[in-house]
Length: 90
Image 1 (cartoon, rainbow, N blue to C red):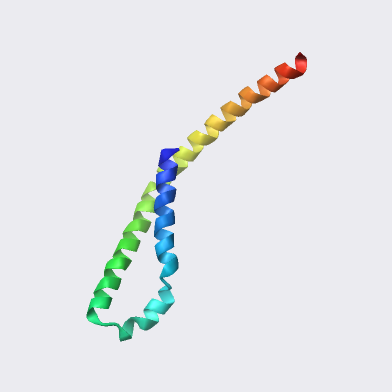
Image 2: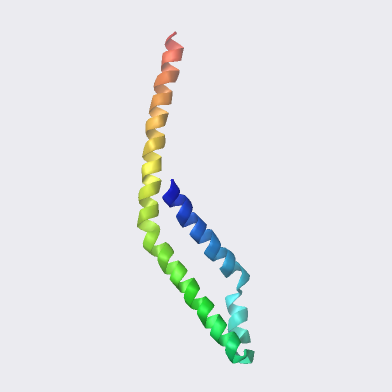
């Protein structure tokens, strides 16, 4: 479950940043930017790309964690059903 939370936190953080950055607007503003603004934008873009790469790389881990959680829930459900049936027999 911690793996899922870590990956989802990473996704949420990155998408919060990207939500505040209108890519089309940035592209249109590019010709009017000063050198330091361009350098800062390049650095941000590289960070965003790295973040997306990390998310993509961790998708198999996320999938495995989700499948483990699903299996745990299915086993718990089986136990609950058995208990319910036991109550009905009493």
